[in-house]
Length: 147
Image (cartoon, rainbow, N blue to C red; front, side, top):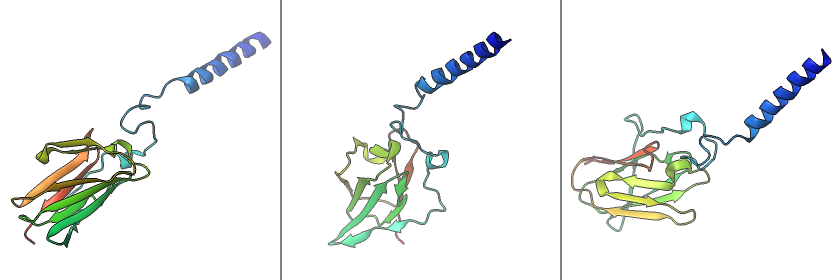
């Protein structure tokens, strides 16, 4: 009887050790091994998000987006016909947001900590432009409006 109990305990201990040493499925995935809660993934700029207006300085519309567990702010409003400069900065927990994609501008770049990335463009017409991470899990938008 003692041998059976000892054997069961040893098998259980071996199983726990094997599971603890097993590689995690997302260790090199979108978050680079960093832990993110599920609600922090799949962040989307929705129609409920009130766009933050870009500030006009010397005829250029400027806004800064910090990438830290999502885009902050996730929605920015600009006017058509005026140049835009969007500055993207990596925060402490960018997750998969360290790759920036803006399909409408055919733009894709891996961002680096401490090096803000300025994206320049001039919107021609009213609409929306989506910016997202390289995996499409984090999303933000530029709302181009006459209002």
